[in-house]
Image (cartoon, rainbow, N blue to C red):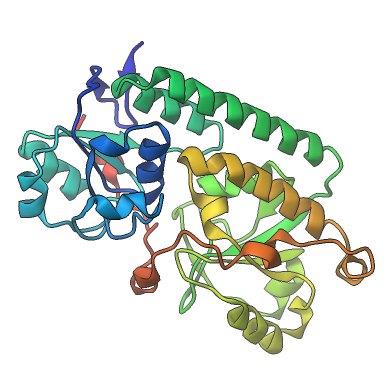
Length: 310
C-alpha cells in the first residue's frame, strides 16, 4: 500500500513509531486505532479520550508547542493538519529529524483515506478497516434519511466578535450538505470568513446553528441572538461543534448526530413539542470536545500548512 499524506509526502510503515499528535481529532483517532501507548505527546486541546489522554505529555497549543519538550520525547512522527497547525511548525519538526504526517480531510469520505493512512503507517490496518466499515454504515444511514429531508439554508456560526462562518469547501460545509443543508456566507477567498449579520441575513437562513467550538457558544448566546433578532426564533439552535467538525473516529458518531439533528429540525418548531420530538442539539450540545481555553483564538483559521514540506 502506498502511503502518501496531504502534502504529497510518501511514508513507509513504522509500526514501532513514537507519535506526537498536534490535532485533537487525530489524537482520538490514534487511541481508537489502538495506538495510545505510542502517543508520547499532544496539545492541551487534545482532551479525548478521557482519562487516558491525560497521561500523555502536554506540549502546548496547536499553533505553538514547546519544541524543547517535544525534542526530549524523542518522537519519530508528528501528525498535523493543514487548517490546525502552522507551516513553520511542520518545518521546525522536520529539521529536528522527526517525520511530519500532514492531513487535510475536506469531506466526510476523506476519513476513509485518513483511517487507512494511519493504519498502514502505524501497523493498524485491521483496526483501520473496522473503522472504515463503521463509517460506511453511518454514512449509508445518513444518505437514506436524506432522501426525505428538505433542503435547508444554514448559517453555521463558529465565532463571534466578529461573527465567523464556514465556506463551501470546508469539511463542515460538505458534511452538512449530506443532510441537504447548504451553508450561507461563502467567501471564495477564505475558508472561514467573517461576516455581518442583519435582519435580511436572518430572514434568508432556514436554520442558524451556533457550534460549541471553536468558540464555546452556549444557550445564553442563542437567547441573546434571538432577543436581538426576533425573526431567529425557532431557527436558532446550539449544536455540538465536535460532532460536526471533527474528522477521524468521531466522524462516525458525527454522521449519526447530523442525521438525528436534521430529522428533528425537519419538524416545524411549533410541532416538535406536541409530537415529543427530541432535538439532539438541545439534548447533548454541552457534551463538547472543545477546550475551555478555545475562546482565546479561532483554532481553525487556515495556516497554509499545505505549502509545507513535501
